[in-house]
Image (cartoon, rainbow, N blue to C red):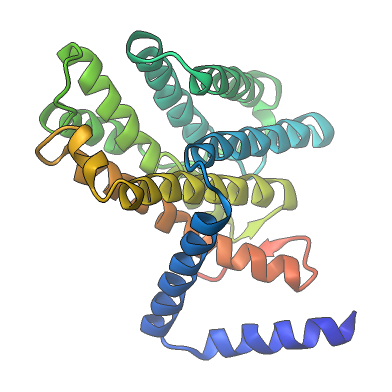
Length: 272
């Protein structure tokens, strides 16, 4: 076991010594390598989107297990859960009025479990809620997303309200994890179940991003045309990439912590 850890620790030490630009370069190369691997292995890239939602559901399940087993919500951001419920509810509405498929069922299950988490934090485990750490003003996220959706949204045959709602949930989803990241930055120490949950979000976001990027590559850009004209297709891709990179730094430290055998994740200053 020790012999196995030595190369991993050597690589970790080498990475720590690299300048920020090199770390960014290595992260981009790793992401491209992962995209290439998924393109070779997964033939129907729509399955990546389904997998992303399944992984998100697994993350929520880990969260529920934490709340039920440990009877504490310390380290969790109620505001991130509320933002998640908002974009899921809006996306579920759009799914019902615009296209009803398996994503509708997955979103319904995820929304119900997210609402249960919110209820549990607000009422059952309120005494352990770290309100002073969860101090991100969510209107700084909701209002800009709503304004952006008014100006940049799909140009399809659907009603204007539905198109704006669709754009709003895309934009809000990409940044909904920011309050949770701020809570972890404020506390510096992340207990295992919360770390597992946020890592699951990171994996889900990467799979969702991979789905869109590979679909664009497979259709040689025709998917962007099918999604409409103007800035909307670009904003969809940008939103997927942004939410992936927001969590990339945390996922690096999570993997490093797991490989090092540490149960509790300690974050350096300025990581998230």
